[in-house]
Image 1: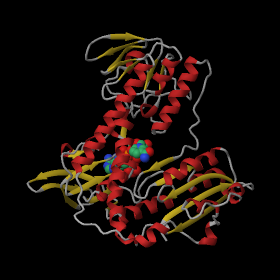
Image 2: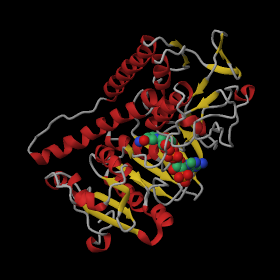
Image 3: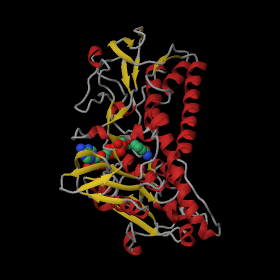
Image 4: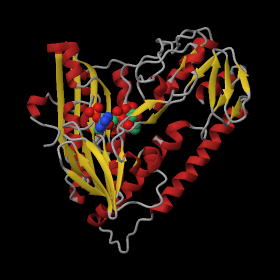
Length: 443
Ligand code: NDP
């Protein structure tokens, strides 16, 4: 959408083909509707906490159909805006699937129309992937979760990544008895170890029944619901199984072989740093390339494509220090290296600062949730190379802190910045080395 719009604004002749609603995974079945569901779940917790703040509440009820339909109305509004922006800028939107016929031709599969172009950008994203265990047809995946007819009484969510952890928080917050099962021993592989530990505690505080160290082998439908068997010989009875076991590039049947576009073993389009594929006039950006699978990264890659191809300014997007967030409750915000990465890259010159505290809002509300912060520096001048926060508003905070990391600021820059009091974020400018505070992520 972004690359198409900006290329059209430069006066290029642009067409975009989209087999679903305009807006992509993020707008239609990802970040946007997910965040609304998180808001919905947070209201439940806020209503509960409000009683400690003097509010008395009676007959509190939750209406899933109302929330679901409000979100879909907003998704449709946004999708319409995206279509409108393209068309207003002179691009043509084909509302059908496109497949490559050769390096300069795509076929639109509903109408059969063939369209030629000097340059082609592949930005078809990814699709949820599920292991093909017996009875997998009884499971839902993230695409389905936004459109449920009704909320189940109980749900088993399989996976320990972004989607599993976020949706476990959503379902538990909406009152569904939730089990999250993960084959590893700590959620969010790839994150800082202390953040991973804190993420597990966050889930438990939200009433989620966490099961580690096993994978499902079979889902059986019975009169009363579903029975799921695991490879450690345990079984769980539940109303719904949600597989959040990863996503794969959406390249099957795209005709890439007709155009000489190479893919890797995962089906991801292979690109160089300019997002150019093995076919010189074809570029690919976003999840279909399986680099850093985040919407704002895809947008940056799309903009770099426009610079490279249409402005004679070869631009490689820099994938280092991309801030990101996991919308658990509370959420997680991170930027830069985790401690293990920092130590392997910079060895002895790494210093780690941490704190863990109960945010003041939770004290009167009598909630146990703590906030955890970690700041990692390297070298004598203590350049900040990683920041990790588990706590309310951490995605908002990390967006601003991402600028500091990208700019190469030092711990001394943080120290001479005055606190804003009373806030949660102020702790980031008063951090002490970990050994002094003796804090861990959970205590
Ligand atoms: P992830 O790769 O984050 O997580 C997949 C999970 O499924 C992992 O815990 C993985 O375990 C587990 N898994 C994989 N295969 C199996 C299997 N056969 N049996 C049991 N478990 C299995 O994928 P998601 O689908 O959660 O998210 C996809 C991507 O979308 C993310 O990586 C992220 O880039 C993006 N995203 C970003 C969000 C955000 O920015 N807030 C929100 C949602 C998605 P293991 O770790 O052991 O491999």
